[in-house]
Image (cartoon, rainbow, N blue to C red; front, side, top):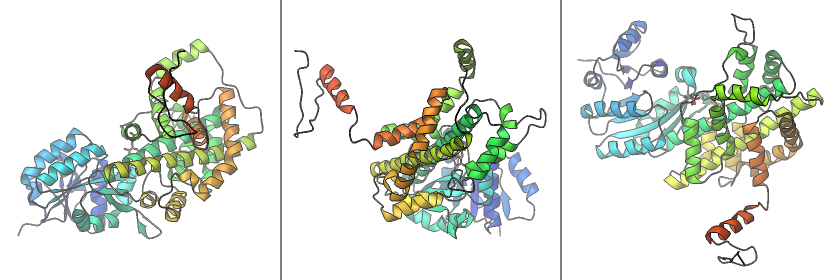
Length: 469
Ligand code: 6PG
């Protein structure tokens, strides 16, 4: 009798390969398919003696699977996912489960969920974080789709995911696009977290004149405290690496133009759509765009000819202030991300568990950090917390760090060193804690030029003034 496999996986780029190896290591037999079939043969040749099978056509691939079939698609987000689904579905049977583990746009996942459900198939959209290593050793998995399908595959995902304190970093967040949405917000936070660290490094370098090695040592020290996280850890590693060709710090040989694949942008687009302020995240997206204007920046730097000045105060005090500013800004960035999750949960009726989002991000993923435990605890204390900054733990940190935070930003502004995400974070905090903002004047202006009316502070109702007397 022909051998059948537990699970099928389509797409043998590095993430797909590593996920396949992870599944097999955990006792699942895996059938493989890739558009360029030579990849399948190469993989099988390397993995002899392991429980893999391969196919050279979609039809053959489908025939290798036990029913109801469980198929993971790990191809480039966008049209390639639709193309693959179109090739796959004619060969499937009712009730088969198809799982998209790419970085798909959540609206695409919602559409695909509807389309596949209408054809009698079950579709899961799964956000996978952790890069190549995560996929191999245990990623963080954010799952969305029908309950009954999750009931059949949930155990497998919990087994192959990262674990923190015995708990799997895999969670079913809700129907259709819920998992991919949580992954998108994860990436928005990732962009902001990275940008905040980069700005902190820039201040150390420009304001304090520290070398890459010295900045690296500071990040490595910080990784033993409240800021402990994967991104701080890798920053410490990166800054100590030397370029073998020139002997200079490798980071200084890397062109300062940041690329992006779009997930940070989707987070900001969704925030605008849902009316949620996410300035730290959005400034991080803008900062990447600004970085890409390298030629213009070079020209402008020559034309303006302004030198960034060094900081004249106490270095050690400033380094501690940078630590506090980074931590406070990070709290703002997560506050924005969780606010966005809450708004999306309402909008799409997902009933997202915010504490679980923090929990699955504790291990395996790029934003994994010690302080995510504190976020889970905050939502355990109050599941309806209006904003993370109001949780007693975070509120106390923000209050305590405030003067350091202001020192960093006033210094950055006076020295002319750009800090888009750090600045946006302090403005977010300062705006949020204001009882009165100047929006009264905006309302008056709107009413002046467009008779848009305004509310008053002393009585209910809608008012209009004939401003031109
Ligand atoms: C992860 C990452 C990953 C992402 C890369 C690159 O969680 O493992 O978020 O999914 O694709 O980090 O993203 P950008 O190219 O947009 O920076």
